[in-house]
Structures are given as C-alpha cells and as structure tokens.
Length: 268
Image 1 (spheres, rainbow, N blue to C red):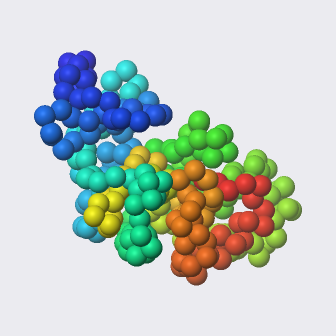
Image 2 (cartoon, rainbow, N blue to C red):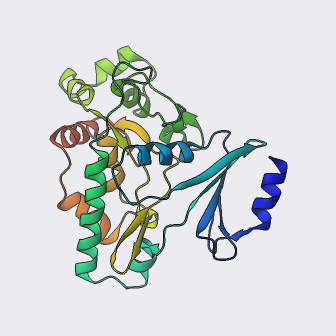
C-alpha cells in the first residue's frame, strides 16, 4: 500500500480550488481522479459499485479502484467531464432554458434512485443512516464531524436527530399521529449532499453527479430536506425549484412536513 500511495501521488496533481478532503487529477490526460478521505473504508467505492450494479444508467463516475493506508482511503474513479453547476451559475453562464433542462435531468436521477429497495430479509433490512458498505455515516447532530448509525429503524433515526436520547420523552413530546407518519416513511437510497457543486454540467445539460461517499439508506424525506434546506450550494434557482415547484412522493412530503413540527434544525 505504501508504494501504491507513492505512485498515486507521482501520477497526480491537486485539483485547483479543492478544499476539505483532497481530490487529485491524473497527469497525462488520463480522465481519472483520486479522492483521499480520512476513513478506513471507501464508502464511495462501495456506493459506486452498488449503483452501477443496479443498471439504472444514471450519470455517475465509474470506480477504477480503491485502497486504504494508515487510516486513509484512496478512491480512484473516472472524472465526470464539465464544470459544476455552482460555478456556471456564479459565472452567469446558464440561460433559463438551461436551468430548466438541468433541473429536469436531475429529477430523472432522483426518480431512478427512488426505485431502489433494500434487500428483503437481510441483515440490513429496516436500518437507516447506513452506507452500502454496511458502515455508519456522518451525523448531523454532531455537525458531521462524527459518524453514527446504522439506526435500527426510521423512527430511531428521527428521534436521534431531534436530540432525544430517551424514548419516553420523545413519545411524550411528539404526537402519535406525527410518529406514525414518520414511521411510515419508506427507506430509499439518498444522496445527502446533492448540492449545485456536486452537479456537473456540460453543453447545457447534466454530465454527472459526484460525491457519493455519504450516500446510503435513509428515510425518503431525508432527500427532501437535502434539496430544500437553503445553504451554500443550495440556493438561487436550484433551491427555489425544489421548494416551490417539485413534489416528491406523497410519503416523503408527508414525513417532511411532519418532521418540521419537532425538529430543531434540518438534518442536512
């Protein structure tokens, strides 16, 4: 692994403007990137493998390979051509028609993801905040600096996110009707950071969606919170579309509305 790491750095250069985790580009016009993340398992590698195994035909990177060394994962994947939607919006490069086309193409990806189901009668059935590698995921309760999960049920996750550590207290504070709505929210595959900087466009259309390392099994309303919470990378025409125009499944919309009656803040 030591020599793999040395070779990887010899054949790559840092991506311009990259902050946070490290993303490096391959030299010699090789259309690959490597993401370097402080984890012992590449949840992104597992997510990409899983998504490609479903034959959904959604525009995402292809996994080339991954390995771990000294508590760090190195995930090599194909580079999605184009520029981020956020950069294009900031530069004023998007016409109203381009904006609508891209939004509708992202909708198609979300509809495809919504068709995925957890395997029945398996060890993971019913569990949430769960990566496809079977690991926990970043926890909004701790500003995503810690990882938690998987939780045994949808309701257990919402109780945790709402800062309840005592079941009796949660049941006293949250009406049974609200709890029933939340419990009925189906488990779906969610990209919890689907913001404009993770949407890559080219020639006025969606080229691909990137950064799948925190994706996994969540209640379906988690995706609604992801798209409607106004913050960096989720603003402008993007956020207004998901708030004012787009409607998710009836179950997701009902659970989203119910969650806002007891959540102190958005979970994303």
